[in-house]
Length: 247
Image 1 (tube, helix red, strand yellow):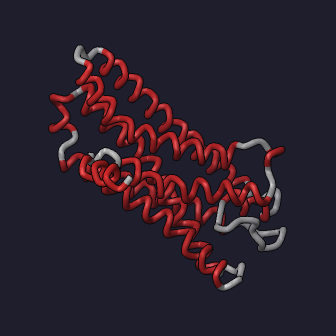
Image 2 (image 1 turned 180 degrees about the vertical axis):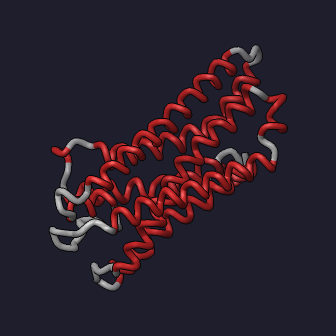
Image 3 (image 1 turned 120 degrees about the vertical axis):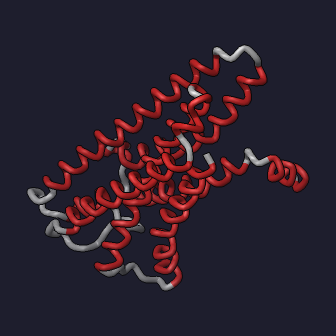
């Protein structure tokens, strides 16, 4: 669990460092310019960190499933070597995924200017600037990505259905409480990540406006990375005692 939390912390730090420093610099220097190379770098890194975090949350759901539903096999099936193999496979496939998205999107000809109505680079904003017949390749990649992300969502849901069935069969109330407490932080992180991302990209067109789109983009790119360390830190007894003393 702590190995995956270390990776989650790295991805949170990376995702929030991709967009915020440039946005803060633009605000302080009163400029709205981003170079093409900065745009490409931000595109690749943002897609990489956000998608890797989502895939990692699916892997963490499997980790929780094995810890609760198959505890006797947990050390064998999820030892240090299998965890490293999963992490390498996750990062390797995600680099390829981010490269495909970035190269495909940046190769589109822009027919409607070069001004993004956003504080950071985003694929939907680039598609609005491209020619109407040119973004079909990227649209196909987005459909494949949607299927992939939906598959991960189904995997997380099925894992927790098995977890809840196993927990409800535990005879002691203390055992059920302990099992639920190990799952609640992960469930909270998944809920925040999915709710903010779905609201940002699946909201009806009637709710779209430049100011609202800006607020929503800040919401889903900033809130999950900031909230995740706080959520998992609340499981630390020393930190909770210090917080109670402070309050």
